[in-house]
Length: 366
Picture 1 (cartoon, helix red, strand yellow):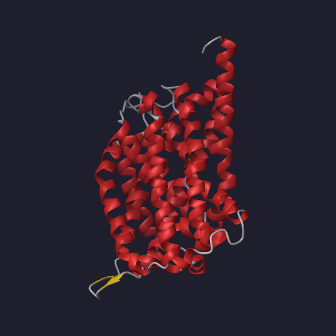
Picture 2 (tube, helix red, strand yellow):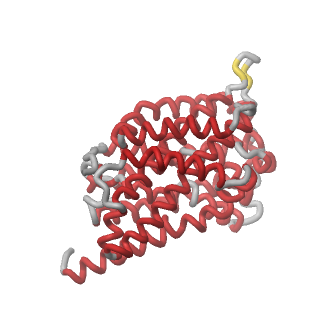
Picture 3 (cartoon, helix red, strand yellow):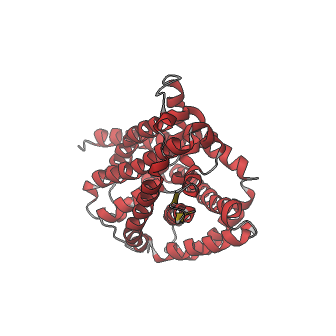
């Protein structure tokens, strides 16, 4: 039988915050600025606002089936065999994201910090830590998140404070120079990373104590994490300018390299890397744990831990062969990812919720 784990609402909120920051703290500014230019921060605000609707959708679906994971809900709504097919599609989605997140770590380290280190070594080392976290369980991971969250905000706040003297407000002007269309286009691409990915939390909701109150911490966590992305996007534009951000793959890392206080405090880009390593570890662990749990339920197994090692090895392999190079990877997440994620993050959950409501009305339940 699968372990019975319990996640407090505060721990769930912490996971949502760290998950939202995730990989977005490094790549979101460049994705947004590619279309919206100096209005990228407006696109970020709009994206966070729209994403609250996704939270309402996911929390409503979770409360319809409080004791079921997404895999269990699929079998109830679509039938046993069709439900397994839908769950397998979700498994592939979660698993692909796990591989892409792992590859993102490898690309970042081999291009900016450990350039002489083989990417395979980095992927194996990081995935080993993820496997250990997954085997300990999501309750342990969520408790660890409460320890690391203050450190993330301390580092992020320090970076913003130290870079403030190099901010130039003329870089964010004029507002809406080319109208609203570029802002909306950038917002669309922003929704796929990370907000449509929140659907993965439907694998964790049965473990939450007092699920009826999950909507508030879900929303609050998303808004706090989203505000962090808005802040770093605004700061990046004000410091570097929109045209410069487009040329940088990791703008937040670039602005940290510009920090110099009295020729004493400088080159503290390692703080940005620290924020990213922590946040992406938790995001990757959530996805890897959820994909492992999804496959366990599909196959009707009693234990998920023995799957972690083989799935971890496949994740490493997929991260290597799934992306040719960093250029292809960044094109994929900035252009193709949101249309792909819409299927799993919006259309399927919305269809599932509608069918669930209709079934309950037909059965005469409120």
